[in-house]
Length: 265
Image (cartoon, rainbow, N blue to C red; front, side):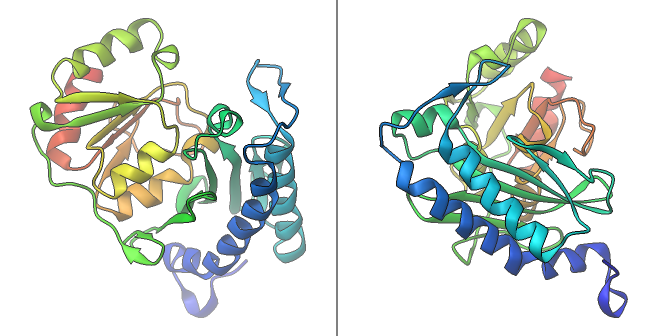
């Protein structure tokens, strides 16, 4: 798609926001009938669980994209990659936090990201049950249900509230480095998947640190976090893109990011 009226890639990304909301609405409609129901659970090749809600939500979003933007690429957790080398690529995680969804915790999220030449420029974090929707577009202030959000102003590790999904995702040296950071922080709260990043964007957490993430896990999060004033990189401080190594360091402020990176890098 050419940029209308000589728009930059960042401003052009905002043109896709109405469709991104429709994708989130379609995913909500597919997911909610299965919430706290006795639905069947399958195990994928990597032993992670998947349900009809995951598959139905991604199918609904893919159908919309195929109808509206057939030239765009799609990378989805459940149904793979189509035209992944396109200029614009949508990255879909229909139910991030499937285990939370299965047990009835309202902390799972639908993640909808948009890449331009491999870099995240638009993201939606949608929590269907609580009807919370965070939106981030590059170079714009992020919002929660239409209201601007901002990360905290914490700059010292000793005051930082640290979050991560679970110790099982921090093996070996990654776990050792995380433990060194954890010892310096005020406290740690475990669990939450993508919801951790949404809460950091609204000032709840000050640091989120994880490893082993895949593109569909983080693509939508980057614009939301950065539009709220936070920083989101890999553990070395590099900007995240489609080929990143899966390590993620998110901080509410630049000072906090630098202090955490010194312990993780």
